[in-house]
Image (cartoon, rainbow, N blue to C red; front, side, top):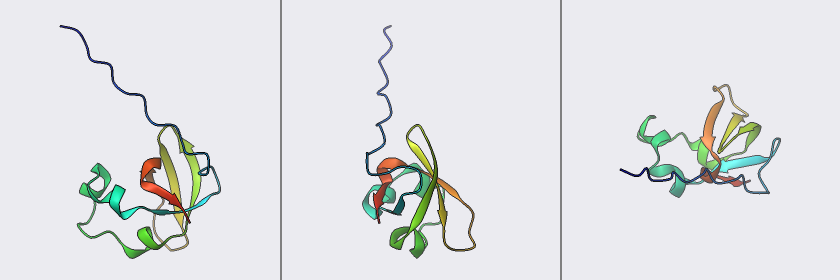
Length: 82
């Protein structure tokens, strides 16, 4: 049986890099694995922004919010520039 090739993760959009201010796209986040592992209703600060990208590894970015909440890792395709 032949193995099916797995698609490579999408590269980071040029506009999103370390230090960029972002917000989470509600449409992209809504049905994602990350949303399923969290509360049913995302906190407002995720969708309103801004969050700052602290690091990028592969298809994921570490985000810090201007609130006393933990940093989170989300996929780059779920983020949009603030």
